[in-house]
Length: 298
Picture 1 (cartoon, rainbow, N blue to C red):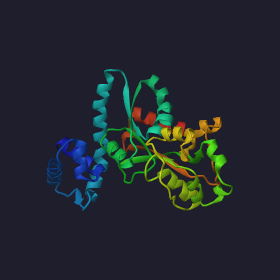
Picture 2 (picture 1 turned 30 degrees about the horizontal axis):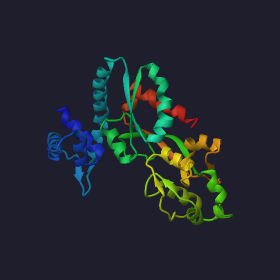
Picture 3 (picture 1 turned 90 degrees about the vertical axis):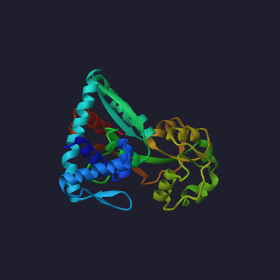
Picture 4 (picture 1 turned 60 degrees about the vertical axis):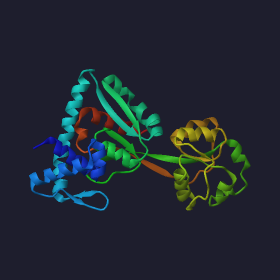
């Protein structure tokens, strides 16, 4: 059997779409469709059901994917290992959000460099894009706040991230008495907002958890990196919701203050994702274990 047909099949199964699979493989959609039909003719069984949005695997398709995918991944790893042997290293490709990857994950993995591991990182914020890259073999491990569905990826809970409502000290001194006990609308009337996106994802999550309401506000500053949000909040641009690990130093130095200390702080959970079967590869397993151990102190 032509291995390229199986590679295309596994990519379609992971992507859930002929169109996305074609983009990942660098092929045209008709070429992907033709290869899947050729494989179905060889097996004498349908592998996918066509839907309005993408495809879903049949029972036979699911069974074939679970049996074939780990072996294809292993073949890819053998080829990559041959390339790595020329330099005497093994390369780990890690994907994750820019702030968490920069501040947490990459520093935690650096001791493995002395053990012959080379690191390559990609910053990705959209979970679907991350899963597609992982499914296509562009990444070995991915860190995300969304747990993937299905059996072709393995997820491990990494850590919980506490969110803190912060602002420069001068803003806290200007708040009217009782503001922080209000449902939050008065707070947003008095302070500008600094966020990572126009949809206010962090502010909205905080308001829903703490005030049981939706924020009615527009951001004064949008910066698509939490480190930039912290710098703007420190400079006095307005209030922001930030992960504690990122603003801990600024809080200790008094550059920002926590505006509220809720009894149950908002949390966001991070997951460490790998393609099923790839944790049997030593360099991926070692990095995975290293990150899980480091996360105990996060």
